[in-house]
Picture 1: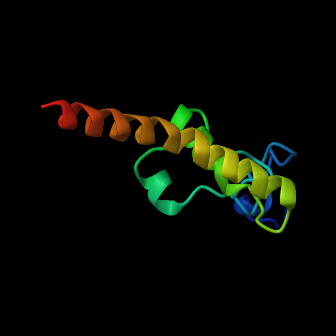
Picture 2: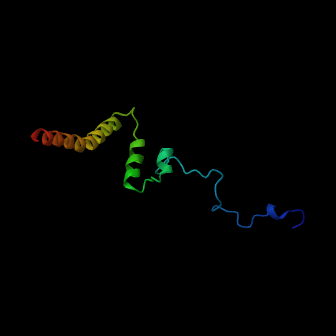
Length: 94
């Protein structure tokens, strides 16, 4: 091949070459994960990371998403509230 340099000829050029932008599309799980969460190793494949990934996809402008956020808040605060109530009752007895 006269006139072509070695790097001008790409023998394995094809669809499996890496893209110019290595970032995954926005619809892939974990793309909205906060940087701090990624830094400590949370991914959508672990329970805490999956919950965080789900919560970051909620949109406050949609009423159904606001309702889901309130349900999540109640679900996570209820055990803490019941523990505090039991602790106060226990301290009153002594």
